[in-house]
Length: 216
Length: 216
Image (cartoon, rainbow over all chains, first blue to last red; front, top):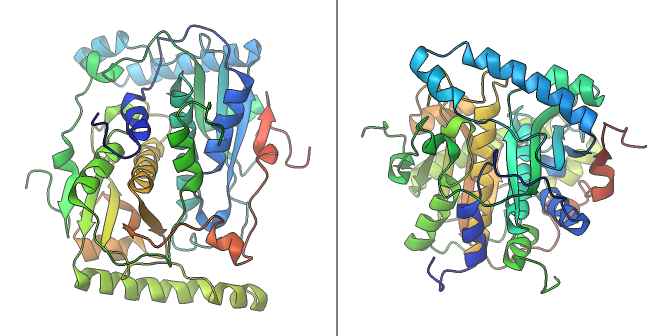
């Protein structure tokens, strides 16, 4: 990283950040780190200033065990959808570190907050959900800056998690995030290292003035 | 900010970031800043490493004028939903800086990328959309670090934008972002300064082990 780049810290963190599954040490997350991480998430932009997110901090083993069993079932559901080659490749890939990480944070979305007249949501129903994801990225970057790893687990059914954590309608869980100290962060994403998928070149994602086909 | 806090730059940027409407100067965004900002967005985590986002950079006046007219119409649609008190308050609030900012970036979501077997999306259809929002937050923080303001315009119909920019199905526009130099960033969000809505205390958003009602 060029040291003259403005706010090199931000860029270092953005490019160092990884989705962690296998590198959790099991160590604790410091209380003041948790506070700074959640404050960073809570400072995200949100449609109509609704701040429609909530954070459920989970440390109890029984909850993590129950979630872990459900995720294992969903892993099998996904595996059954794959052809033989992909299934073999998938079998080598660890998809979560629920039990190895000391803290889990479930981030939720409350569509009722600020409703009915949410400024900026009348034409785009998903805008509130988008806000929650902006908060999640802030959380992820902050945890990375604090020296922790974060892993987003998405092999679950929302209804299962609503029941497990007593989340009432219409509130939706958006993410289960595993957080904790790590031995290291890998330089390359797990899915790339395991040959599941390669990263796209940035150039292919950039268009000028109008959409141009991916092969233009 | 406590100088001993790790990565103070990140936290300064996260807490300084604003959704900008009225403070654009009309100046240009430096080309190397654009590259770093897009690289930051492109480094976001994504479900199944699909990187399902694209970035359409828009500088042409005709496109911005057409979008601006559409947004004005949607502003009127929203205003008509409000009671008299909210309508008065809303009338004072500027909701976009499309013409005053020199660069617009439309961020899109391609649900076909990596499909059908997207690792981590079989149980949560929206997971790909979530990835795009993580990229948007990276973009927003990077632009803030580079000294620019960003404003997310969400008063539009997706179908209008698809047609305006020639975006083919099933690709969805997720955000129209206005970017440019600003006179300053406000300390408080516009909607709070204009009395539309106050920010929540972080404490009200934190739950332990299970969901607890907002008033628990």
